Length: 354
Ligand code: PHE
Image (cartoon, rainbow, N blue to C red; front, side, top):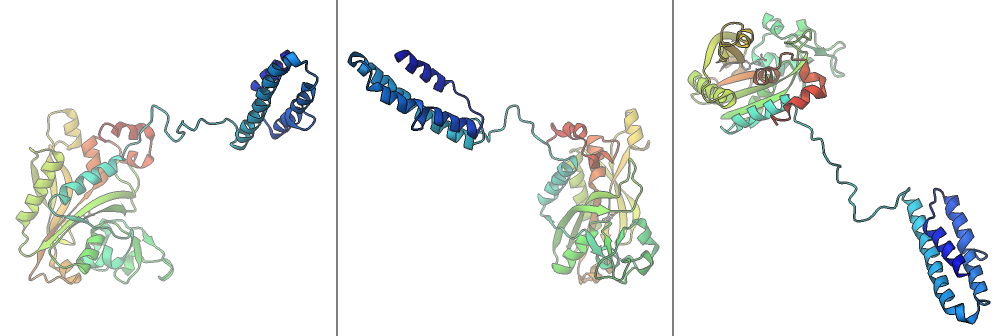
């Protein structure tokens, strides 16, 4: 008899179940009215007196075991399988954890924004679908002026506009386009704020260009605007020199070359001196040692007027750079398309930089 009790005990301890049916069978076998445990209690009556004590104790142990096991299996089944040690935190990620990186475009954006924030520039943002006024007309691109062709534009149909949206020839007549530069944001800032204005606008811009290693139809820009009384070309040059030295290194040399933008007069292109020592330097700088990094100029009085700022009292400068281009120089990336493909092998290379 005692041996039987031990066998049952073992059977219960080793029991594994996988379904509700298994659990029910276990209950029927051991705990139901006609199950093993009640039967053993009946049998207890006939156990010889000298064995009663030991048998009784063992039987009680078996009964407890069967009942706890039943409860355990019941919760195990409810929680969908394994019972979980409550001391184990299953939300802790396994080791080693793979940590992602910031995208190189984002890293450069953050760095450039930080450099200008340190000298009091604020960040402003605006819509990616722009109207003609903010993207072109307010920036001194007269309707039908060839300067509009400098930036191949995606015109968009808009529910509130005549079918087909704005055609290149209806410039200035209203309509919508994907913004071709974030200068549009600066128009919004000038319309809504009084000078002094010191702001930079980072953001995504769109141009209808064939995708190649050097051009893409989507890219990012950071443009800056400074307007106050007596702002001079020298102020612009000094601000840009500060930027170049913070970003490209303390010894960086810059030069400004005359250029043309409808919204600035005079306009310039800023180059930084890259060096001309290795073959790669020759290739990157096309043999000049200088790299073009941004466009800039004194805000055209017409632009100030369009935005409700009196050009007799205020003057200002503006500048704009492509973030991908800047990142290409900084990290020596040879193909612009890599920034948009999200190839993990490419992105992983920026782990150290982050
Ligand atoms: N908006 C110009 C562009 O997208 C860049 C620029 C900004 C040039 C401000 C001069 C001043 O090319």
